[in-house]
Amino acid sequence: MNKLLLIVTLVLMCAGIAVIYSASVSVAAKTNLPPEYYLKSHVTKVFGSVVILALFSRIDYALWKVSARLIFVVGAVLTLAAIVSGDKVNGASRWIFNIQPSEILKFAFIAWVCSKLSDAGDEIKSLKCTIIQPGVPMMISAILLALQPNFSMLIMFCVLLLVLLLISGANYKYVGMSVLVSIPMGILAMLCVPHTRNRILAFFSNDSGAMKNSQYQIEHALAALGNGGIFGTGIGMGEQKLGFLPEAHKDVIYAVIGEEFGFVGTFFVLIAFAILFSQGYNIAKSSLTRFGRYMAVALTTSLFMNFVIHVCVCVRLIPATGQPLPFISYGGTNLIMSAAFIGILLNISRPMSGKSIREPYMSSPVSFDMGQLTNFGARRRFI
Image (cartoon, rainbow, N blue to C red; front, side):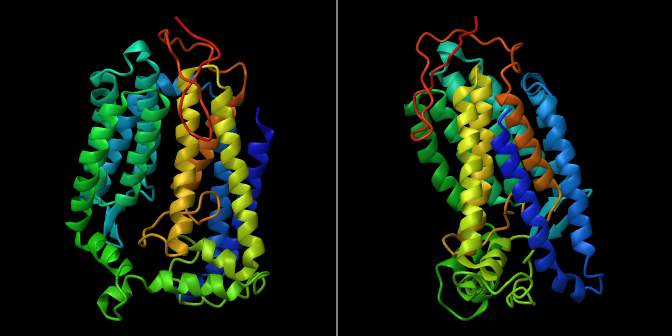
């Protein structure tokens, strides 16, 4: 299997343990908890994630093709339960039983759409295969995520669907029409939710009033990055985490890395993730099945979106939203699901996996180019 992908993932997890300890000590002190409280909790989750990674790397990825719909139902039911009975955190109902079910829903959504697209064959450009079949899980997911509300996750779902449609050779005319309809509807939906609207307006506002309060954490994240300079203040010596960054160990941990390890530390993180993403797309390129290709692209793109949103929030390129930095931020569900994604990618990279998958013949398959995400071509065609 792809050993470089495994090594980079484990290195990021280990780096996350050190940064979590540094970023969470002040948070624990404020709530009268032991200084190592968050560290111990995170280490337990890291060990669990490594076990999940190892397990999923051994499970033939063909299983996700046949069980996608069942997993989607489980994820949808849990997400609905979180909306109905879950606790509200920062204006959104995203948690139930200490898990974030939308992460499970995202994995099931990827598996279901990949399964449908890989089974389309020469009908891939039809209205049914381009719009109707992928549209069913997309609409269900969109409604659930809008009700939470969790628009950053909804945007990720939309981008994942768009990427999958483009690489599978779907009808570009139908895809373009869907995008033109979806964008204004999405903007309108976000502006109708007070919590989300305030964050968007605060991003474009320079006022010092109520709107400015929505950008409090982001302003201090920028201050942390600026304070770090080239080599940083040293591990444990950051100042902004001492009450100025309420979610220092979660939503803005990249800023903590920038302050304590400087440009060198953030550059290391960027390089590590660049290697991880390149290996994910290389696995997609070498997969022997269309389903494996689509899954590898979608799983890698999902991790990439998490990374981009987190970093862009910390450097104030987009409005504030709560997305963790994969493998580094404190958390359970995202860490475990990210580890599961890596495990599936490792399994796809195994030459003996996926042999039970049978896919319809495509008379004009397109080839995968990591740079352009266009023209997918298969090494093997299944009848």
